Image 1 (cartoon, rainbow, N blue to C red):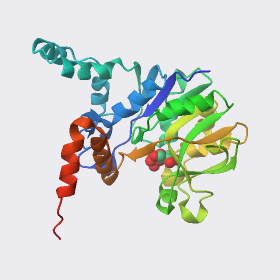
Image 2: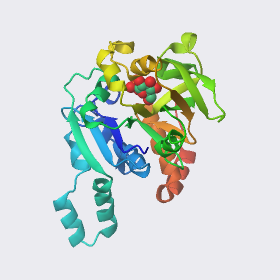
Image 3: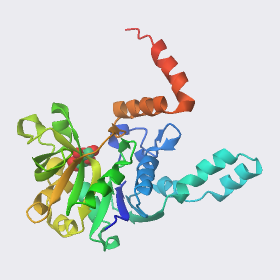
Image 4: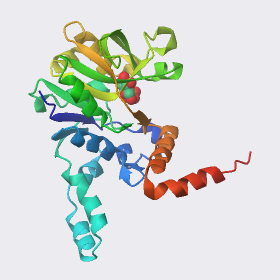
Length: 291
Ligand code: G1P
């Protein structure tokens, strides 16, 4: 079975970036010359996802516009013969079929956001992509997960080894080994347990392949960590009846969801790109900090 639909929860308030996100969605902040959200959508498209389902909210219209065509702009670029720019502008509207579901503010947590898309998912399994987590992988992260999904019967969560700070900040899984050293069977999952209570050092990164049965569970899930309806809590409940696997993907995750991580992501991506690498390398080595 191929995964064809992905849910992108984009209804969050972007508080970590205030005041920059007072009047614009954090998902539209640029990483080099593309908005953060485009990285997740490109990854999905390259992984075989055909329908991108955005759980959106008030003030997020620019996301819809970004993935739509822009007739006037395209006409001007065409007339001026700016073919390369025209291609870049058109690329974002050709990444799949876009569907929008509106979530009322204030947001009630990731689990609640995912539940908003229930009616759009008759399929047995679907993907969830958290766009703050920009996956910097040679083979797109979700594609790697899809390949594993075809071999196992169950949900898959992308994980990465973390430290004590990560155990405070992420969902953490307790696992048992499988034949594949990168693939673990999940026996428990806890949201932001902290280093004292963390069952391992494997942290959940924002890519999931989930069974649609999760919707029934989410309807009954009560507010958990941070007073929010947590996807993690619903997965924990589902572990009683469903198989879930944690997959240590190849590549790295850039955290574009907070200021320092966002700057690191800019630098990393700029160093990877030919047209910016030289200048940025030179700039970094020339920086002198005066205290
Ligand atoms: C969410 C999930 C958490 C996961 C994290 C990855 O947390 O609830 O389990 O580890 O994404 O980025 P949030 O960043 O929304 O607090």
